[in-house]
Amino acid sequence: MPLARRKLLRWGFIVLTLVSYLKYAMRRRDFLRQSVSVPVAALFAKAAEIECDVAVIGGSVGGSAAALAAVRNGMRVVLTESTDWLGGQLTSQAVPPDEHPWIEQFGCTASYRTYRNAVRDYYRAHYPLTEAARERLNLNPGNGGVSRLTHEPRVSLAVIENMLAPYQSSGALTILLEHVPESATTAGDRVTSVTLRDLRRTRTRTVTAKYFLDATELGDLLPLTKTEFVTGAESRAQTGEAHAAEVAEPANNQSFTFCFAMDHLEGEDHTIDKPDDYAKWRSYVPALTPPWPGRLLSWVASEPKTLKSRDAFFEPNPGENVRTGLNLWTYRRIVDRANFTLATYASDISLVNWPQNDYWLGDLLTARPEQQKEYQRQSKQLSLSLLYWMQTEAPRLDGRQGWKGLRLRKDMVGTEDGLAKAAYIRESRRIRAVFTVLEPHVGAQMRGRAEAAAFDDSVGVGSYRIDLHPTAGGTNYIDVSSLPFQIPLGALIPIRVENLLAACKNIGTTHITNGCYRLHPVEWNIGEAAGAVAAQAVRIKQSPRAIHASKKLVEDLQTTLRKQGFELSWPKVHPV
Image (cartoon, rainbow, N blue to C red):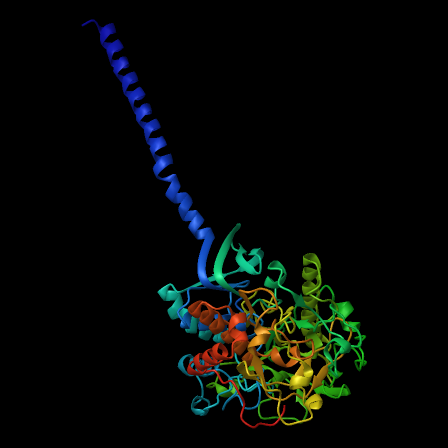
């Protein structure tokens, strides 16, 4: 065969082969489009849409307890949190628990007692305690003056994660960290879905559930779901409360705080860069009613109960050198090095949540998002300015100025700037509830008797003084005695929305009574009760409102709660 013909046949074969391959590739592409792209799309859809029995929006103290209660009662639960730490006040806000005087004996749920015991056990298992500290039944790692359990935020985080871990492992609990609620859908008086923005990635997730629990720090789910709510101070005419404002002030909410931890290394210099707003805060004199006694950055502040001038002092690592008066170093100390073996800690560690870094020049609840960011920036500047003032100018008992050795403990709070991951929030949006707790129900002065009002629908107990910090409206402390109280079921239920429950500081209280219902063990009880109520509602196919309206259903619920370690009433105790 001539050479030219052989070449022509060879090239023809190559062309035919290429054509055949291209036809195969085209058929394969169409097949992949039809058979592969559909399940991939379905997979992404599944990741973006989650269905459950109970959705707990907000991983606060109340939110964590709510999720625990709901999964314990057989529910499929989604728990979301805006930061990367569950636990709210106890962890991301870095505030050890404020508790009532009887907490070691009674006055909390069994799971809260489990949490407290687990904190102590964590120290015994993982920290080099002295033998005396290890054997101490009521170990207080920091020996702080304000709490019987001052400790590191990371320990609370570990305990809360461990309490939830079995349910997460079983698949009953899905935890979505760094997710914030962005929108919601409703149908009539029911919430049908909540869409969350994933802060780690540019995507959203939509959660559908039978019940939604708002456990966010500011009650963020309430406006999104069009649930009726109130903010700020009600008027005396509205509530009949002795300590209510003369005129209702929706923007008159309590101050918030960015806490921080520090130690002190004598002879070293850990002075931070001068904060941008230092000049402002160094000279700032609060304009409050009744008046504040002087500059905010000083050792003088208003005494909360009397509002008279109160002198404090500051002495790092006092050891056994105990002076009379209020030493702010030990006030919220979270590590007392005397509890640990020699050389474990070069210094105590103190948590700063003081009058000097409360921020009240703006209200987060009524501000627009951009203004909220600015208020938080200013609050952070105040906390950093307080630290810089203590490092450079603060008067010392020995006549000198400043402690250069004060060191910001970023590792304690898990942030680069050394401030807590989130602001310590004292006041939230509050639902317009089926029942609202008023000062005449719990205030010692207004009741004029030895016991708080009894609630037939009690789902728990709590106790703390009515403690309001200075407010965005310019009101100084309100700090008055209260009586050990119950938590009424009606305060968790909105007046209209059927499948949403309040699960933390957003229950049916007033500006005044929020002051005693906002503390750690009470918020835990509120959240745990909300989770248990939602589970009961799913189980018996009755709404929380229907349960509340039926004496028998309330009693059935209370029987369930008692079996799960809820205390629903108080023994005879003295007011706080």
